[in-house]
Figure 1 (spheres, rainbow, N blue to C red):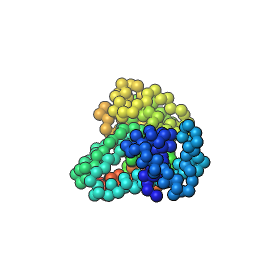
Figure 2: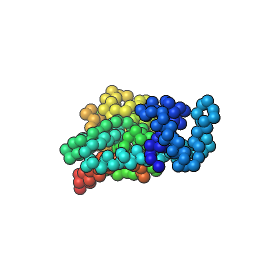
Figure 3: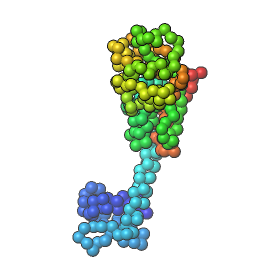
Figure 4: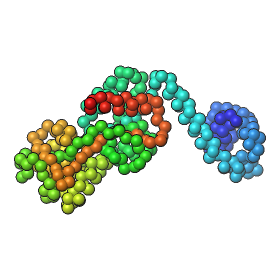
Length: 296
């Protein structure tokens, strides 16, 4: 059975017309009619009910249609994989990045990868962890950086950052000068947080609930540098990963939190048991190798 037979059958079914399918496929109508007839003879069934004005599938045709789409899709995926085998001479990788991340290390590794594989292109898309996970599952992204563990079990992961979260306070705050505080001591403060697309939002909210209070969130943002400016302006306090808080240029106080202590675990994520292009696989291998070298 030629894969073209199935492709023509799918297109005739989609357009409900031999003529329109032939036009779409840039072949003559007799050619496509002959292909369908040959397929029917090979399968021993009629695929279309030709007794009506409108072309409709028979019961056998409906059963074969779904299988035909699966086979044609598998064939297309095979061709993609074969194309990728050409020495990584081409490829495009879509990577999700959270704007909360200090991207200097990551961009440096990306630059090194480009030196080795100059024909592979990148698309970097900023979003929170939740959206990055969703886009990987929907095949809008190939991989991403996200807060671990992911909400779904459909991801493979590689952790490369583990650090504490710190309370970020203005210099005039009553708790200024303390080396560490209980989370409950912030119950009367106004909170400035990342928005709800970020896993960090839920992490902080759940920790506050476990400490016995609901945080009073007065502002949500997707930009970490805005948070420092808002704290300095007297709008409230925040809780941030230590590395991110250190990026803030304002005169702020970073205080350790206990009861409960809060940690941040960040890593690479990609879909488990799912086809990854050779370019994506090589980028994941290369990046993990460099991250391990940098941590040793």
